[in-house]
Picture 1 (tube, helix red, strand yellow):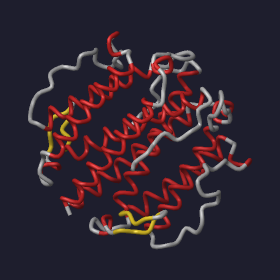
Picture 2: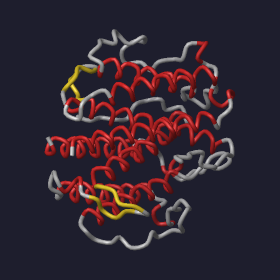
Picture 3: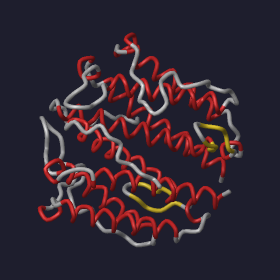
Length: 160
Length: 160
């Protein structure tokens, strides 16, 4: 049963990755670089945040300390200038997903449920991947909303 | 271990519920009723979809057949006129979450991993709640994006 739960956890991560990457792929640099209305973040900013989260979780799963966050506590990160570029943002995302997937696969079905330090608490890799998947879906919903604001109501996901 | 996995599954659902309900609570009827730009759905439409999904999953978990979807295959549902109302939309959401939570709690830690018919396939309640949580987060990201479009950059979540 624990092996099956590990496979479902990995599959959920894979689906969240595919949805996010395909939606970024379907958008223009101008869409990804735009802060709209009163208080929205640029998609590049939250894609950078997703990449950092993937990398930092992967480090914890490997038993490493990812060090302090590269942005102030209680704030959301802003993408550095060089990552406000569609190909580079996609590259960082892809690499971070490869890292998180590999680090999750490397855990035994039992180790997936052992507590690890993360943020202010202790969580299992199983809980953390669940959190990452929800967080990725949250931002993917925002990408889809932006597409629709610009008249693109198509579904860009292909899980084949 | 299976009991712990059940508790984490329920907690993830509870968090997704709190985030969504608190974000709806922080928005006006005008925001929830507006289809913006080229191709966006009204928040009332996707909140109705979330309520229906909760109810239909709960029925499956109880061993019941929820019957055909009340909207055409391959389309997204549109909220009926009477549910384009903030208090009624919140009431339907709350009731549907109560139902899904109760139906999940009623499953034994082992039964949570038994396949059930859903849509075109067979999935365990564990997989389906994971899907529901991602789907709820996806739409919650959209609510937060709409808040920010209107200048509201505050975080409305309180898990205390």
